[in-house]
Image (cartoon, rainbow, N blue to C red; front, side):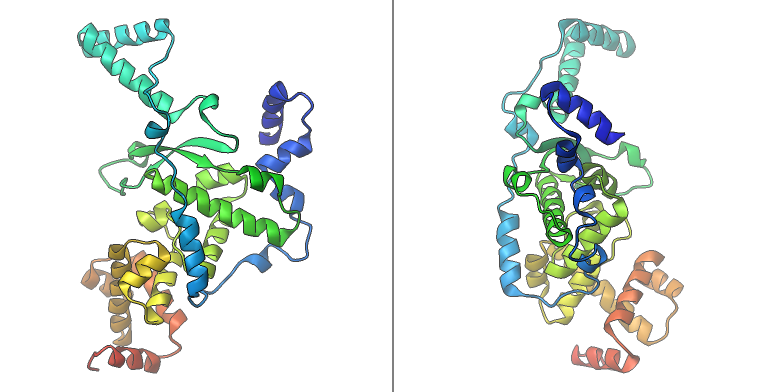
Length: 334
């Protein structure tokens, strides 16, 4: 259905475009998924790689080069354009419903029109391969007082395809998945630099791939390169993503400081310190046999978070003797 709709729209501008050409843009995975030499599962990393400074420097340079301008800055002068009949009808509506003067009502209407035009820019204001989107704001923390649909949002403009990527799209599974990971990571950092965060559902819609596979690809990338990709799960802790905690704890156990881990992972020092502190607290309580439900009361953390850290404890330590050895090295008297 998506392919048919895109093909119909595309043919309005390019009458001779074929289904294959449109598929290359919206869902290239469909063209390569059965073309080896390896399978999808072979490209998914399951354990955190040891930190590699050369790899870290390369990705630091790549991520630092992502500097998209905010939509309001990029579009220049504010776009107040709208049909006069629409402006007059909305102004009269506001005057009637809110009982405001005509001048104030018109200002409110113009503000709404400006906001709408920032969120939905005209096609001539976009480059080829770009997509405007309304995303979760970086400060839209979960709250029992605010329903999810009323959370603060941020307009962003994403580079889904670059001209070079589109001209040289890979034709094998390993090469395509490597490119897809880079594209997913790029749009996540582009959104973050514009004060937005992309959910798995939005990424699923952008890349026409299931949210489960999108999640697997992000987790694989994080484990492979010791990076934390900005999503609602990693920035707002709105979800059950555990990979970023695993990456942070792995680097901590390799001897890196909080400041170094924050630099390597592109995560905030405060969040890194919180993950490390929670992990070590859970580690000590686990050693002394405290059940999870009591850990939650003592640490003032949710049961899901405690269980995630318990999984990390079991992953990084084979037995209690190794835990004792680690804690003694940290200066804990046992």
